[in-house]
Length: 483
Ligand code: CO
Image (cartoon, rainbow, N blue to C red):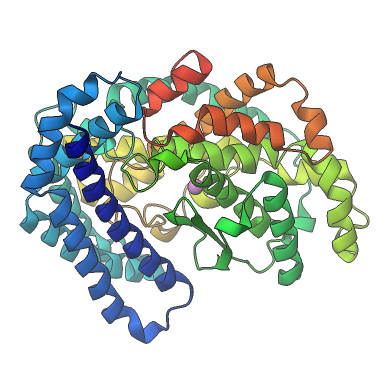
């Protein structure tokens, strides 16, 4: 059986190599590739992805997984061997259900939809995007039909981003959270608003870059196994656990946005860099789920990076770098400014207090589209009605409403809730960490994050994809995701 297991890990290693190679091509596409190379690059990525797909749906892989199953279970349910076979099998069973012609059609439809969405958003005209989104909803329904019926059809989509998570669970979490959150925001809106004008100034990009690098280094990002570049949208990608890269962007007149985005991506990257080396080149390398991944980025960006102890250490240094901007701004003003709460239209610019409501709105609309209780043509109205209900504001046009996100154009339904779940998990992990390490605030005041990172490594990062997200959260905190 050992020999069969070696055959399996060899095959899975080759698949991992191909996927990482495609990721490297995609990274280049978003950073340095000249525009003219787009068509050729698209073809190259498609070729490599097809080879990887063929290998990961091959009968050879299927029979190895069958043969190894009971032997692997005999190694103990939490063992690496058993987890590897279980997760590889899960991935395999999913991939083989989806016919090749569907994959091709999906790719054609979403490529066209992406163009249409860009155009529709620029013109703020939902009608341009509507027929494409209708096709995408139909495709997602067809995708669901390839799988055995679940409790709710949306479960099948959600499972691709949050393994094991059920629609009913997410709904229950959000239904408990929403009224409290709406009430909180109403209360804040009734108060005098915080001044954050110093945020909307022009800050030197190189200095912002240097400061971001300093913070990422303090967090524990390993530059020997990573690097930072610029891209239109910040992201983290990895080509192995020894090459985990982040990107950032600078926006005019938005002082700290690059800094917080660097902290966010560093959080994602620390997760990938911290996965146990024994999981290298296996399906277990990578985060447990999107929500777990987002819990790491949010923890570093929001819980650490917007806290007073963090800035007690870093603010004097920031002031020294930007004396013209910040000399007259006290630490307390800065701290209040970076934590300003405001009801706003755009999800990616939303603060911590309002963010989850943007997500709940999207989840409800996605579920309704899959259930068929709402038609795509009625989406803008439904969107605006919920914005009014949850946040008390109405988008002036579709570009600031239903057309703002790229996800649906990419065919992705089932993705959004992971952002809000990640916020919740980050808070739960923090609570547990603070109990285990009561000196954390004092450590942050000294710019020392070693114990925090060690704790995250030992409890979350090292396991990679071994455990389902809910089970991992329960293992660490003693309960599942809890609003
Ligand atoms: Co993120």
